[in-house]
Length: 527
Image 1 (cartoon, one colour):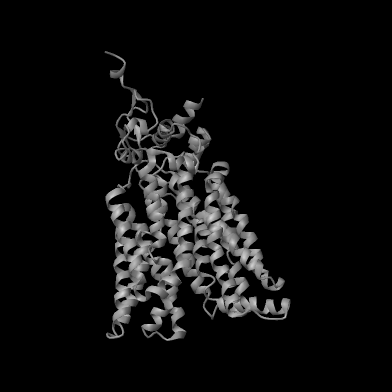
Image 2 (tube, rainbow, N blue to C red):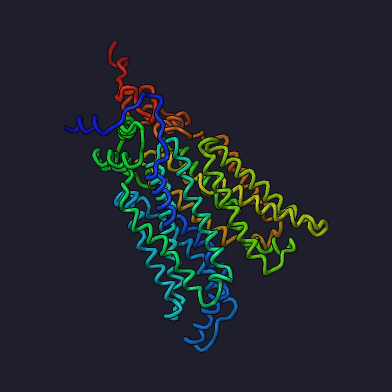
């Protein structure tokens, strides 16, 4: 009965001609998960900038009503800094929970269940002024950080697993595009003509519940990750149903066989812990790659740039009232650059985008230093500094903003992927917090030359990717593991978790075996 079902429901195409098209279901899931999760990360990065003065005033007035005296400048700065930075602390905590959550609830299940955090955070921040509680604002920011830490890893993992290999790059960059859209939305809504007024800042902070509510209403109707259903849950029937949702005119049988081959190649289908991942010599280069690109993404100077953007625009002669509109313009550039990355990654590949992005950022960081030093003597250099700011933003959004999360999914097989995302996400948030904390001191001590540090980081990461990370475009997860196996001092068959007498036949299509089976190496047992 099962075989007849497979024969009736599964479309079979000739080997080597397997291509999957972008279906409405794939696009809908990519947009829903990114709109209700990834976009909130970008929104929360920028949402506190516009109402900063009003939030500080609220903190001060609350102190007067409670203690009879207001806060001094140092205490007020400390509370506001805590409000901003606690988001990164929550993000670190959320990233540490990813491995446990995706194993227990699945990829889609984790995205859906974590929405409760957004409603809690939105309620706390939205009613904070009515309750006269600065603590509600700070704790609400912390809870949104937890949600962002979870979604920043789970959404790319989910999209990477449901996408066919020829669309994995495009769908993998959709979350980064929505992160840019979140920043842009916060910049637009934060304009004085919209929500950038004193009466509206609690509403401004709590708007995160709207996209999450839409996601919660629609996303549960879509299937779980087929790879999770087959490899971890051993549910072939649910896997077929999920693939039929996400595919059109493709070889579902071949894709299932490729997943089964990955399952057989694992020494254990159980999710490995972070500690086991670190100690596993078979994934040493993959882990090192994830560490370098995730740290490099944050230490590239993109976050520090926002500390200095207003000063650069002011030095360029832009009037103060118009700086907020100029900042909105940079947000639009982020979206345009993100779109360029999405629509070129499957044609150019991962390596050109991430190497090119880091190189552009590195040269523009050096350009900012040069322009800031020379603009005293050459007034036109102030416009060069504005161009370098735009170049850093564009370079970041084209590649480094999203490719690291995509590569993390591609470099590891099912058993190691959650732990890899935990490591990458944790380092991402730690680096984010470090830059935010250290940059003011670096700026005071090094002045305009502080951007040379970021220049060196960008160039070093570009060199690492060029020499170490192979191109993963149109490769299956098993094929990518085989490419890295050549870097390890172990036999390829051992890397795949087989016995020494087992070897893989040539792979085709989605990475299936030629005959969908394993071949014994009889030379080791037959004279």
